[in-house]
Image 1 (spheres, rainbow, N blue to C red):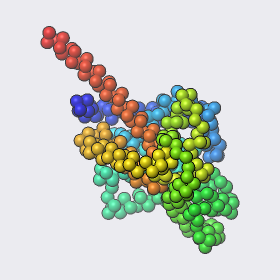
Image 2 (spheres, helix red, strand yellow):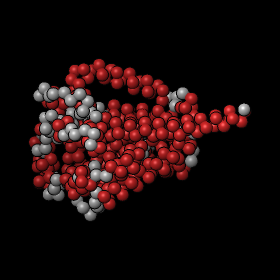
Image 3 (cartoon, rainbow, N blue to C red):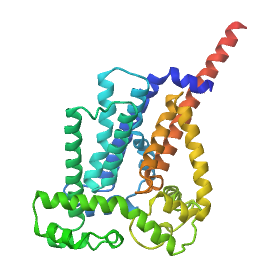
Length: 361
């Protein structure tokens, strides 16, 4: 408790250090991508995705140096939580949310854009920074939605084909379309109307399938009676990291969706895959932990980022498994950051205490 109180007193310094750390991490990340992994804007998205994921291009050093980039959302939380009123600092905190977009564009990753904007929205809602009654706010939201739909369509076409006939044929015959198929009338309308209305209609259907198919895939996965993975599925990012270090040698293909379908199975599907029906009592414990964390975060700003990570993952539990992808990594890196800060301040206070005692003696 004493150390947490010390962090409260040093909040301005912590914010500045974190901003610098995140900026440096992104610098190392983009140096790694564009130099070591040969990601280029002149390449196609498929080539960039291959180069970025190629194990031969992996650098453990740059993986460590760029790890703090996942905390890009934390400075803005600290800014609002501590009622700081400095426009320059606010601009920098907001700018950090744009940094993942460069990688998202070069690799064609919709997830990075979605996570960045999703977490930003939650932060603004929690700190009452969004007024939905404002006409300006509505215009900004509509503009963002249009840009997101356009980017999503661009990514899909880059992955598949610029030819409309081939593009729609592959999309409407993809795996997630099997359990949540679009109506034939809708497919024909989209294929025969290569205009803004047709593209908007397609984007709406695609988004609906993207959001809902995970529940149906979960049901299908459970019906196959898969073998339980005892945490390896949800802790996929840790397994992958331990494989990189040579500590483990678990084939990553063996801890994916056991149905061999490249589809989401929701967070609950992942829990069932790991622990079966024991996932139900584990979810109760998970909820108790979150409640304790949320209550504690009301009294200490240091804990608020962890609560926001949980809120984000909870909102989308029925869509995709955020805990399997980015959550655990962000959670761990943030804890590492807090531990480092605590150790530094604890050492400084210990030295100060020793000097005071020597002076009194």
